[in-house]
Amino acid sequence: MDAEYGAVAPVVCGSAYWDYSRGDGFGILNADGSEQTVLWDAIVRPAPERIAGAPGTWTDDDATRTLVVRDRAAGDAPSVLRAPARVPPTGFVVEVDCGGAAVTVTIRPAG
Image 1: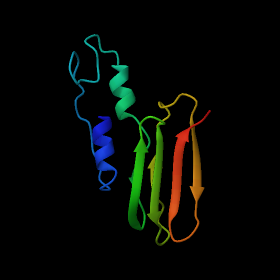
Image 2 (image 1 turned 90 degrees about the horizontal axis):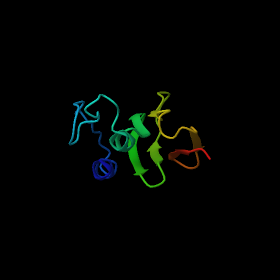
Image 3 (image 1 turned 30 degrees about the vertical axis):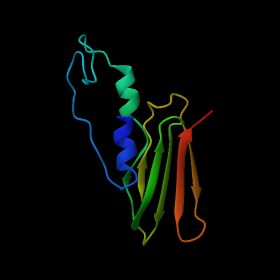
């Protein structure tokens, strides 16, 4: 899953994980219905949801759980980035840099 997320970001593309089965393999649930934590941790991460203006780039660093989004904002429409509370339990720090023609937003774990 880390490789998939690493592949979609450079080409400004999205992806989805649809295996909600139980048991061994790539299902996100164990046979008893509990979460396979390692798989959930791989797929639940900050991500751009909607980018206003001209699409820019984003990077997703799995090792640091950091998302960096750069775009060229246009008009009054908002960009929407999602940062799930699940990862990490300490929350996130969001940094915004509006210097120049591009806007850079960094979302990283707090602490």
